[in-house]
Image (cartoon, rainbow, N blue to C red; front, side):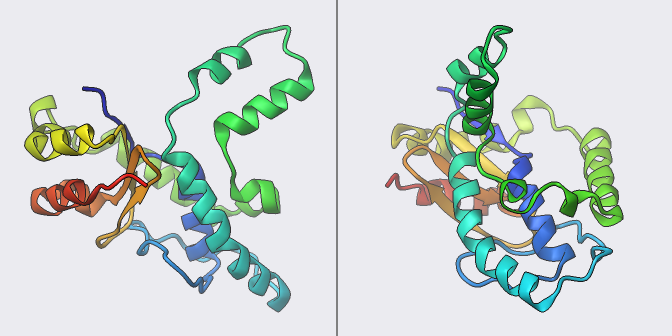
Length: 199
């Protein structure tokens, strides 16, 4: 049995930062707020920008998390390592491996902000210095008897968002999206694993 856990989905983290740092009010099926609330972004959005960003966010969010739930494309990654790969093919493969992102739609400049850098630094430091559980205390080991039936139904990947509050979604036929809070609490994690139904 092999289960991968993606607890640092970069494109999803960036989108969650944008939502909070720019105070976007987005509609639809969206996760709760980040556990580490970022400072407001240094730039004010115009009314037109705010309207467009709020409209694009939930659509792009769906694409980003769907990609996060897919298995790693090892063949594409290997091809990317080739030195003789033409530039246009490299760009296409890189896009396939990395998936959609806020940067694709709005550029890199939005992340050249002190709020983003400070938030990213805190996240990196928390991951580096955080409490690392022994293998037998990892949530997947702790709740193995709930994980096995989900794996038998096709679960291969668990994507974890650093958000406060419960949020659980099945991503396609192979992945489950949960918040850190859900994964850390055994009863909630067991219920999330039981809810996994491929579609």
